[in-house]
Length: 303
Length: 207
Ligand SMILES: Cc1cc2nc3c(=O)[nH]c(=O)nc-3n(C[C@H](O)[C@H](O)[C@H](O)COP(=O)(O)OP(=O)(O)OC[C@H]3O[C@@H](n4cnc5c(N)ncnc54)[C@H](O)[C@@H]3O)c2cc1C
Ligand SMILES: Cc1cc2nc3c(=O)[nH]c(=O)nc-3n(C[C@H](O)[C@H](O)[C@H](O)COP(=O)(O)O)c2cc1C
Ligand code: FES
Image (cartoon, rainbow over all chains, first blue to last red; front, side, top):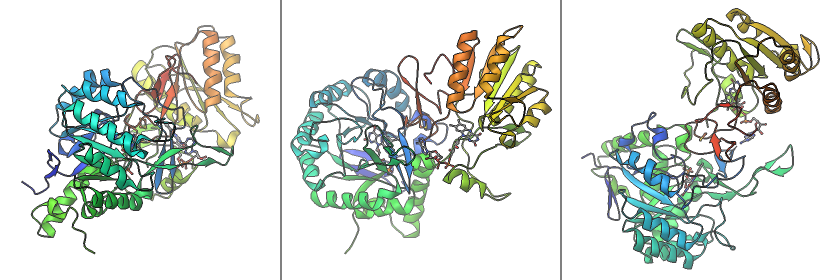
């Protein structure tokens, strides 16, 4: 053993490095570029009950140290995912985490139930996508009662470890994190993208048709880190940290703050080798600092 | 983030690219020194479907660059060179005509200001030629700005000539994972320029 193994609830990962939902497709897209077997886990693109077309162009806009996206959850839908995408991922020696997104509580139930008999390791419940309509008031993950209800049902129907993925677009994220913990989530993924926008100076129009888009990348890292800190303080279950992680030092910051595992998102676009570089980096870090286990680093921040 | 660029020509173990500095990414690339190493992923996506017999290449702006490799490949494979139509705003912005001539292609030029060749748009030049073709080409391959491609596709439909277009979109992953680079397909679905394209049959996409 190389000391990299971590536990996320009942799930054991060979290392704490994952790839974030929506930035890694269904895995196959990256298989020619990196060895998927090396990854701690792959989180798939969020799946919806029916295939989704997604939003009109433009969908991406690069900003200073960040990327705005308004994909609108384009995905192949539940049936094709089960028939074509999941079998491919099952061939690899890595943990497969399936991300689901519904437009209503009952769609989350439908998704969890349909996936119950399939072989994969955990369910990430995305209640925080900013690019599709959730409720009239906002995102599911901005409402503690709805968050509780969705996570509770996902746990009951899926019989898999459930990870709740939260939005940073909220005054007090700890309230939602606690609701998800109470509902039976085994871990909390922190965070999805920040609400943001851009204006096209040539046309004086907002760049995105929906006006709002999701900001990710190094630009959000310090804010994402603080959300991890807040959630870690509020719950006992493990936290999966993400937001602008591009290298070993970024990953260490999240782990030391309290993340039991981390995910690389837009970093995969910049360089698909970033997750593997972080894994190797962690190995060397343990050796150089005479540490036996990466898990001893989790939440080791002192103040 | 990375920037998508086409292969202009392959010479032995060298790849040539031609690009225009338009923003931060291309500016940075222009500052790279000789012998400096850069990280490249590719080739990605799929290219033109090669067709024997008479073919026409239509290029505008930096889109012209990618057609040279196609011309060379067609010549190598079928021993037949395409007719090349290239357009630019003026003669100073005209790209690659020597590269095509070196391959042995007949090159016809259109400039918006008439400073070289046909005075007008490359699509107008194409329309005039298409009206008097003795034999229709088996394929028109095109790469250039969207208005050019739109008009060309319209003309090809009118003259019943098959047509392939190479499209551009801003990209995230480049490998088909993020769904950032899509164009509308004729069946209503969104297709990925990086993976399903960048070259599409004109019948597959709504421009
Ligand atoms: C398959 C393919 C092949 C290509 N081949 C070539 C080639 O051979 N040679 C060549 O010169 N170019 C080529 N291009 C175009 C090239 O990729 C772009 O010019 C380049 O990415 C610009 O990068 P930049 O950082 O310099 O400019 P940027 O800073 O990205 O911006 C350039 C312009 O685009 C606008 N813009 C930025 N983001 C978006 C967005 N998301 N949507 C719409 N507009 C936006 C900006 O406002 C600005 O006006 C190709 C593109 C594709 C898709
Ligand atoms: C193009 C794109 C698509 C995304 N799609 C999803 C998605 O389908 N589901 C989800 O939970 N998060 C999605 N995300 C959010 C990421 O998983 C991640 O939470 C966020 O980007 C922050 O991490 P990063 O800064 O490392 O990218 C997407 C992000 C990007 C850039
Ligand atoms: S750039 Fe990501 S799908 Fe094309």
